[in-house]
Image (cartoon, helix red, strand yellow):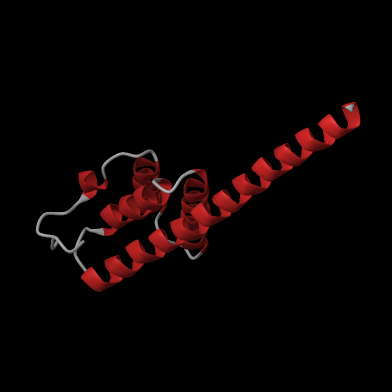
Length: 122
């Protein structure tokens, strides 16, 4: 009886755990899509001083998906800024980008960084 109870308990724990991983991976996948959409919108808008807004927006949208989205946004943001630093981009600009990234990931309104005149489409 104890063995049967133990097996049922373990199977329930494993089921919840596997559902959690599936959920996390789904959130991460869709969060990466949110980051890509913000990047694509930034390129399409080609708007002066909008970089920080799109950083904050991509991270915000990804983080709204859950822990997997937060993880994806952090990994993508850190990788991007690491690469930019490697190729010699300014340290101060990279730090400002990371501040905007953290702002968005924390659930703060990305419009804090929105430049004047940026079309409502974005």
